[in-house]
Length: 200
Image (tube, rainbow, N blue to C red; front, side, top):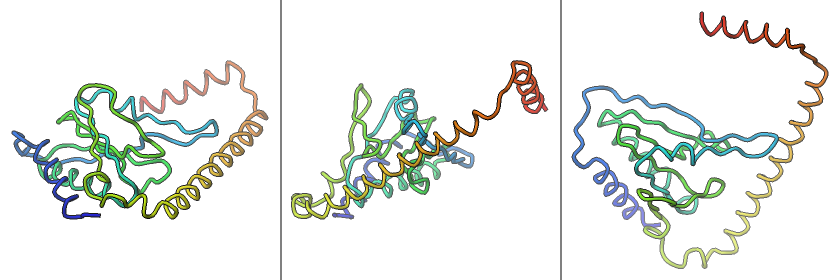
């Protein structure tokens, strides 16, 4: 991994998106969100719905350890310094991660477009930034193919097991909830109670 080249790429990107931008006379606000979730019926992913309103979408590619999160953190830092509000999205499988950065005022977003949320450009204004291609020595995948495959398969096996457990939890929830029966009158009373709480 050529970390100097990775840092250069981040600086080049920041200069590109900040070109002709003036610093805002206010403090930046960061909103933390999830772009998907895990359910008993499988994974729900909202990436396409989030990105569709952005003029520019950058798909960050590269294996684990190639600097995708670091790249995005540098962009976030720069946007904060300029006073722009930021939306940071985390992966539901790893809430501590930073997997998407969206800046509404600049009409752009960038995200870690690798498994388990891998996407590719489909329209004008979208492009790939491949950190592996730009900053990793050619032949690295081939050299460590056996180790990479072993780790990948290990990761996938735990993902599959997690989905199975969620399905079991969903079946248990349905069985538990089937014990309770609500009449139309009960439902209306509940809705009315919630409405009153919202209004207050």
